[in-house]
Length: 373
Ligand SMILES: [Zn+2]
Image 1 (cartoon, rainbow, N blue to C red):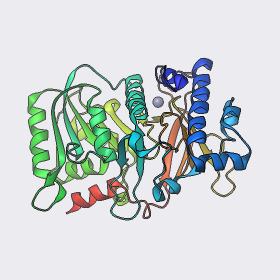
Image 2: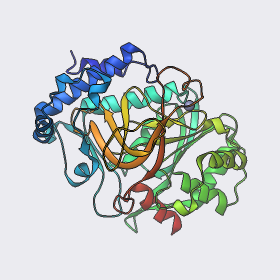
Image 3: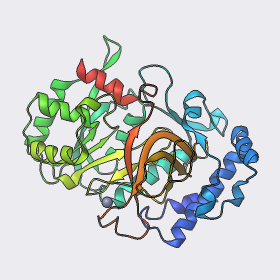
Image 4: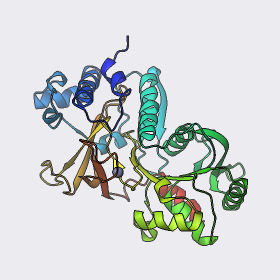
């Protein structure tokens, strides 16, 4: 029997089915996850003891608000774990341009959970398929960059469908001993994929693709079965940033990918739950997580559509104690009129900006430096 039976059950359920039973499973899963960190991590136990609360006392949605949170910078400055190093099977790192890095540590069951929950979320959003696709990934070749969060995400995402050729645009240059963006190779791959008439999935940073479309004045017809899945935001390229809905229309016009197949993903290396666009381009919050919005000065819990600091709760990782994380990103919670949004309990997350960008340079910035070279 599993050590975390409620967590196992949670990831068998539909992530956008907020039934009483499923919401209760999240609570039970949170309780068992918080308890393992409380028992195995001195810092977490200290926070909870200081508040005079024990994980077994979290029995309602309202109780979740009383659970002590940790600030995201603690995870950037320290290698926080709740298991011995020998139990870890993967460390995800975002490739910063120096200074602090974002990391997440995974033991075997957490890695299994993170793969499972990502599949269930994409499946529920109609993004998985048994059909075979060519792939164009605007990221590092994961064979070389196996500890980078984005490369891991791409490898994970390419496994949600049948696979033909996978082309990675950021390649290792053995002479320079560094990664570089192979622009010419990328254009050739795109043309080859267009001519093949087979469906294509493009994965990558929106700024990368946008710059390529403009620079090479691309006008392509990739076809009604092709997809674009973006992530990583416009960090470091805010001057070029295009509002999401305009970007979607522009890509449809220039690459011939239907807007309903253009999906963005918001994720953090420290959090691990993907917030993925529905067909209308809104980031849906799954029942595998809870999102609170807090007033940046008073930390009061804000109502729907009010903008504040984003706090993320999740339950899948028993090795890394970021199960209740207060971030420095701003956002709000709202509703969506798509078929999933109309189902009871479903909410969306609107990202309103990331605080301290210069302090937390992420992989998107490193990658953009390469585009500009
Ligand atoms: Zn929606």
